[in-house]
Length: 208
Image (cartoon, rainbow, N blue to C red; front, side, top):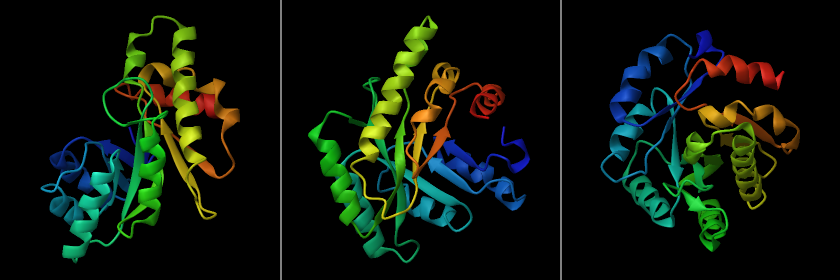
């Protein structure tokens, strides 16, 4: 799936998954791992230890999570700043902050002034796309993903740096060619194609 180091990032849902991937770091083909669940106080010590070996990224969708990270940083000698994705809800109603919510702007502002986090990017996963039955529906969902991350990115001060826009699901990855020309110059598009790794070849082809 990493194609010998061509792709150097993974998403993990459990700590044992990250621990099991550490040999890939030692082999020189993995650089970073996104912990894909809401953070809790009990996982932070282990994530901090893992960050000694592989770059750990987190997802946040509520200001309380920033407070949790600030409290941990204050009491820990392991890590002083966490790189985070702002997690958006683009219609699945499963996780993330709604793109039309006043809470999104508040969350971004809170992250930008915090000493404990740095905004790495904006992330969404359109889980409801698996219910689509035709290409037009898939394209509409993909458009909502792109509109969501683009809208949020305009609220974030990158201070001249690059922002990662992370979108995708197995169905919407098929339609990625329809959006590649809409990306702002200070951004990097990251595709997480859901549960079908073989689709990576199709994505690479459409982005060439």
